[in-house]
Image 1 (cartoon, rainbow, N blue to C red):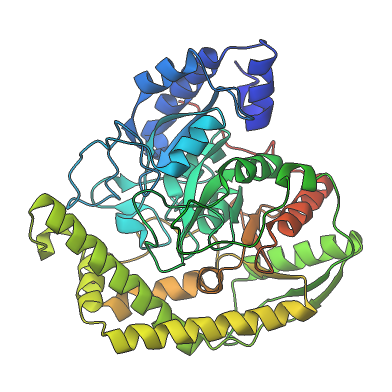
Image 2 (image 1 turned 45 degrees about the horizontal axis):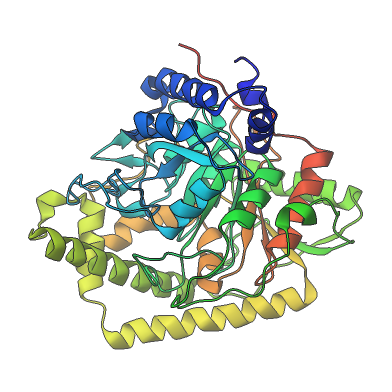
Amino acid sequence: MKEYAEHDGLGLASLVRNKDVSASELVEEAIRRAERAQPKLNAVVFRDYDGARAAAKAPPSGPFMGVPFFLKDIFGLAKGMPTRQASRFMPPVPSDHDSELTHRFRKAGLLPLGKTNVPEFGLVATTESKLYGPAHNPWKFSHSTGGSSGGSAALVAAGVVPLAHANDGGGSIRIPASACGLVGLKPTRGRTSFAPDFGDPLDGLASDLVVSRSVRDTAAVLDAVQGNVLGDPYWAPPPSPSYLNAIERPPVALRIGFATTTLDGQSLHPDCVAAVKNAAKLLEGLGHHVEEAAPKLDQATLVPGFMAYWCAHLAVGIDTIAQMTGQTPSRENFEGMTWGLYQAGKAVSAVQYLTAKGALQMASREAAGFHQTYDVWLTPVLGRPPVPLGSFNFDETDPVKAFAPMVDYVPFTAMQNATGQPAINVPLYWNGEGLPIGTQFVGRYGAEDLLLQLARQLEQAQPWAQRYRAIEL
């Protein structure tokens, strides 16, 4: 099936629907490609190939009927599959049920083949845990895939599957999409549900969706999985009647602000600046008004507030695992950075937590004010190109020392998790080393339709869906 990777997910589903190919044939091709790529990428951490084969015999007739798919090893619970979050502290116990998200993926016709590589508890912007080992970037094997959805991004970028599950609590959809040259949309807060297992696992920071190679796949998945469940703590504004139909209409002329420095005025790598300027020039050619502008957000306030959230929720998560499994957390169970963050989380007081919450809410108001003037904010996703594996020290237990290089590497993405806004990575630029340099477009709260329309317009102007790196052994 040489033409397999030439199709996006909707394209493969159309072949199944028209009986040009069977779902079983697609699953076997995806398995063959996954196994061929695994020695190079180390992207798959759990296989459920027989489960996918069984499901392929009678695939649901959804928009992705019979399309092979992988779930990330964080959230996305699937019956019969363990979800370990790359932690040695989490035993490999198969789930006895599907999460609501996985149920909706399956109902859309997607056929999960297994779980993909992540960093421990999804804490960092690269995928290289002690439990699973590093995932490798298909564009340059010695470099990072980004994180935390790094395994999913590697498989999509290598043409193994056309799309894969991803989630985002600080950039974990957009960062690997940038590093691997993919479309990666973080939806608006509350657009997807964590039912039935979680109400609010990160106090509104986290969202689920996918990484993909085409805008229309991302739009169709959002149609399939968006929507709340009774009891959810957050409810997004009403969705578009159809995100997939919406992208057929180009956006009206937009007012777009762009950033070529960090919020505190620090310089970015020249490749990242070039990627933004390339996007800005393309946008101007499409009739949009583009100028340099940024919301007035105080990074010195935002970073400590964000870290208080992350550390406290990590501590709750680890203590919950301990309670469920009868274990006692100890240093030898965790990577050094994780242990340091866990200890910091145990020390976060209620006063500190609520102070952080107030700071992030004020940031949301500032961002909302910015979008009264600008429809979209354009930034790089990363502060520099995808880094070589081993660039960060995960044995460091001091959270400040451990995380300082990470803040410089990902200077923009956590803001949208704090404010709840939708944001999308668009793969428009590759540098001289052949590495993708993503650009991020941030929209108003609830405006995924506008971001998808803009991304589709850019995709038509400068197509990228056929740009992938097949792994040959």
